[in-house]
Length: 364
Image 1 (cartoon, rainbow, N blue to C red):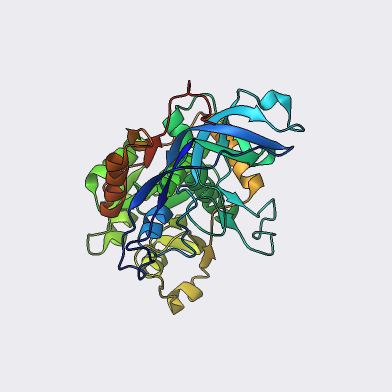
Image 2 (cartoon, rainbow, N blue to C red):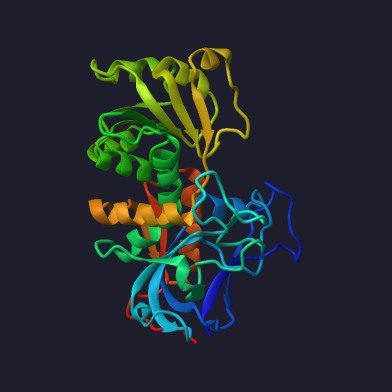
C-alpha cells in the first residue's frame, strides 16, 4: 500500500491553538482509483509551506488528522481514467495547489470558498504521500528545466507571488522599482525572480545580511535590514536618481509597513499584502491616505494565474530556490528537521521532501 504522512492528535484529542505541536504520523494510505477524467500520479517530491507548520501548531483552520500534509507536489502520471487524454501517460506534472478558483480576477468563484491542498478537512488531498489521484484539469506539465525538488518548490509560493506582483500590484513593468520584504521565504524569492525577469528594479529587506547578499546575486539592486532603526531612510538612499521612489511594495509581514511605505512609495503607490507574519493587524495612517497609497490584499490565485505563472517560468527558465532536500517518506526525523528550520526562519528558499525517485512506480 502507498504511504502518507499526516499529523496526529496528542493523547487522542486535539490541543489548544498555539499550545500544541502535533507529531507527524506515517500511515498506509488507501489505494486511489481514478475516475473517468482522473490521473494517477506517483509523487516524487513535495514541499513545505508555512501553513503546514501552522497546522502542526493548531493555528490554521480545520486541521485534519487523516488528510496528508503539504500542498506542493511533482510526480509522474502512471495510470489514466477511461476518458482522460492518453497523452498524459508517463508525463511529469505539477499539481495545482488549490481548488475552487477558475479565472475570476477578483477572487474564488466557488460558493464554498477556496480550498488548499494538504492537512485540512476542507480538501481531502495532500501531497506528502506516494500516490495521488487528481482530475486532469488540475495539473500542468512540469517545466523540463526544473529538477524534481525545484518543480515541487514552485506551485503554492509561485502562484502567490505571481498574483501579488503581476495581477495585483499593477507595476509589473520594466524599469519599475519594487520592494520585496522578508527575502528568503518562498513567495518573496519567487516575486524577486519574476520581477527581475521582467526587467523591474528590485530591493529587498531581511533580518539577515547573508540573505540580502544572496538576493543581490539573484538580481536585486540592493537591500536593508529591517532590524536597523530607520531602515527606510537607508533604502531611500539606494534608489536611483532617475526614479527616486518605489512603485510598489510586495509584503508578507505587515507590522509597520504602512508607516515605512509613506516615506518610500510614490503618490498612488501600492502595497500588496499576501501575509502578516508580524501580527494579524496593522495600522492604516492618514499620511497614507494623503499620499493616495493603495493597500491590496492578495491570496494564492486562480487556475488561470497558475497556468500563466508556469508558462512564464518556462519562458524565462526560472529555477525556484531550494534550501534543503531530505529523502524518503519514512524519514520522519529529517522531515521534522525541515519544520524546525521553518520555525527558526533560517531557510533561504523552499524545504523539500523527496518522497521517491522518478523511476518509482505507483505503489498500489
